[in-house]
Length: 263
Ligand code: 48F
Image (cartoon, rainbow, N blue to C red; front, side, top):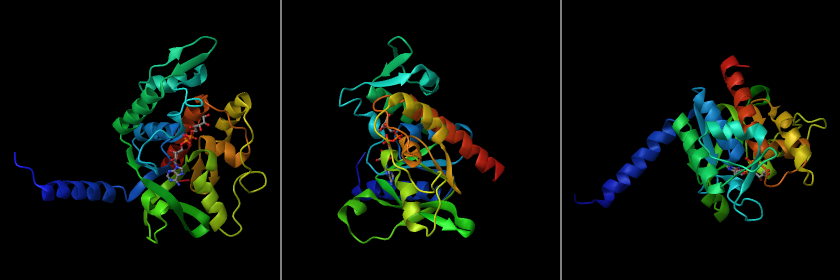
């Protein structure tokens, strides 16, 4: 078969445009394709909701790849093992309730599970802002290419609507911080109304508090994963990941309830 560069180009531009246009009105937009974002996408898509994940890197997986200090293993406590089992990830039972997994397998299988369930995952796109409408409700995400962000070029973004926006951006809680910075008089649902900031490492407490911290923190905007602990001032926990998976599953339930209930 003779190959034509212009036909290759046509397929790329048409395919991208078709998928992007199909994503203009979402049930749920997730910023960040780390462990919590991927798990949230999996459960939301399995519920039949229209969910897209926007990841600024050209690769998914967030902090999973690096294991602990580049030692390529992650640890998962037994309470969360069932989630990985549902997503097809095999873990080694290392005794006393600790399981361990290979980062390449965890990222790969979690991503495939989310996509097979019906989620769409975009890479190279930064959620640089949100849309806010009457009553200070977050109604969607504002996107730009990460390459544009890094270059510093002045290029205006594009926007998609979503009934719920989930900040799964990890330690920096970038989306919540954007809202906090840009909305005058904004109150995040913490005791003081502001992002508290993460505390030093304490795996036991960080893993315990992350699920409770996973919730709606501003109308239309929920937080999960390490972003939840940063928002509420809980400790980091290092290379144990069970809390990230449990948090992703919890936020999926909350977001599905909000979309379905229209609340
Ligand atoms: O950091 P990350 O893996 O977040 P997580 O799901 O998991 C945390 C763990 O990896 C680890 C830990 C384990 O105990 O503490 O750190 O909470 O993934 C966050 C992803 O969000 C992307 C970022 O590139 C990463 O892949 N991200 C950050 N800001 C944006 C973003 C943004 N504004 N738009 C799109 N993606």
